[in-house]
Image 1 (cartoon, each protein chain N blue to C red):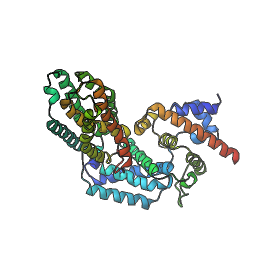
Image 2: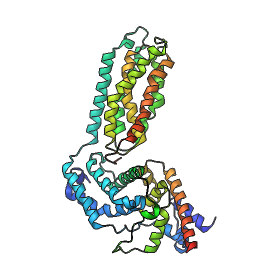
Image 3: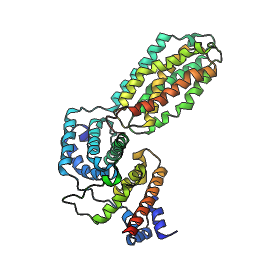
Image 4: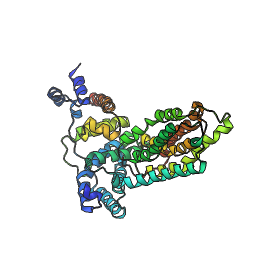
Length: 167
Length: 248
């Protein structure tokens, strides 16, 4: 990270290779088809404003904080697309998933959640951050994140149950 | 409480135990909610490489700009504005025979700290510094009133209004530059409010040495109120501006 801050291109490329594909997946779950634009905004932000990186701070939470800020800015400026339209198309050459059908079912339900609940669940359930980390990333209290996640999980469970009953 | 409810409770409190995990593993409704790192979507490699190329280009063309340099320059600019306006207005209050010199000096020093250190805290990465700044909202008016001599010299609205105008006009340049700097970081209401308060304190500082009206009502309405109002006004102004970078 220190080398990247100093402008070292291979160091940046290494960070990009490590984090960009996964971040793109998280952004797809939050902003749908605008994930590519938000990903670009995120990486351009961290490159241009790398002087604001605090030495010694873990990179991944910082990157996701920037990405969440960029996603929120995008959603504020553009009305969010209909949830069903935001689901990613099935890739032509899909990566092996543990249960692709199940994953898509969860994501269809996820797209129906309010923005703040979706963010909390994407960061907790899919990206593996703790509630404390998420609270720091979102600039809210840990309790607020837990409440959002709890409501989100509750709603998700209801949606999943109704989908199962309807099947 | 059903097993499903219990699973949900433990999941949302980040204390998932073995019993809850075992239930979820066998429950078709709860199973999809079990935390675990899902694989990323298979995105387009070409799109990822395009973003990498643009970011590398930006890395080549954008020099490193430490935030401390911008913050220090902004703090110096604000101090200069405060001192120049003080020089223009004069120190009538300080030289008044009714002045409480120790109180005036202490509050003047506090205001200078708000003008300089306050702007640095507002621009610093992270959110804590800016939030601490917001504690000044009740503190500064209280200090202003404590340093006042209680003597009324501007009995009419017309004679008191120049104080309000001074606070607003003095803050125009610092606030405009501050808002431009804030565009280079993520939208944050606390940070913006803190910067607005710091910028508006330049006029407050100048008036502190100049205005001889030491009544609590005058200090509240014509000094502190426009200061707080400018701090709050900064928030919708910043919201209306586009964001260049989303770093915290």
